[in-house]
Length: 393
Image 1 (spheres, helix red, strand yellow):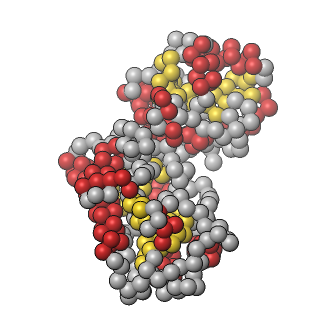
Image 2 (tube, one colour):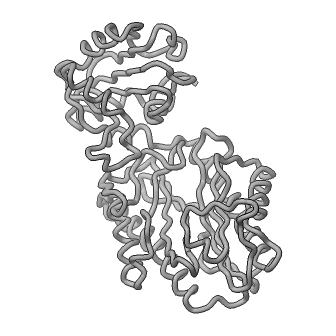
Image 3 (cartoon, one colour):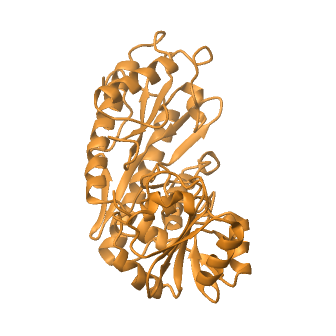
């Protein structure tokens, strides 16, 4: 893959001008800034400091160590090699002095997925005469967007994951006293492999009260056996390769024929909060209104709070998805963070409200959304509407 092949480099200058900054200074070292790698598209890992300057007007500049020039071969601009730190400081100062520049920073670490550049690098740039502002707008425009191929791959993965989740839960709810969480986790992984999907971490499989832990991880020897009357939660994610846009979903079942009222009430509340977010987003696009991640979190949280579960919804409503499962674009969050970045066409995210009642059970439903110019496309095509039970299986 050639450098900058994933973005429209000609569009960077106008975007910088619209945001009143002189340039975008991308920094990476040992992969600490996946945004930089995504935008630049360089091969390998920068084991020495790499700076790339994308100016509002003029020629891009790369500051790369002399022993790592191969990784930026074909750079569409000027490469200025360095070796000694004094040489790097001199070259960097020539680039940034007197400039207002965007970097991957977030004041007060407000949005950690955006806060990628070490404080020491920021202070160095400022000491050399630069004024650093957040690159939030640039990240949404150029790092978080999906390519056409990534969208197509995501759609296919989403339908495959949904099929695996449905079939697995339909089978598991009938295996009371037999199914164990870690064993089901292995079954899901095998089904994904058989379907040509890969993942970076095993899925979450949780029964009963374990489902009240949003990031529960089953382990052989300490996992639970399924009991009659327990909920079954499966959260799974994956794609065709490790370097593409994953699909990420959560599905729920019940080990019995008729779930009790408290389980149904919690499920219905979470499901309707999910759909309220999607409906709000559809209306906003239809009316041409901007919408932020914080706005959508407020919609879900307001619905869940109205139905008496506000204290049981202990995480954000959703996360950005790009080639990182938890991506760099806007999150659906006004709880853990105040993410007021506007949701832009070309980007995607999860919607995953949850209700967690420790010692009893947990409920979560999760879909993904890709934003077209005309509005949102949810995946998978068929969203879960009812708990999968022994009767429905």
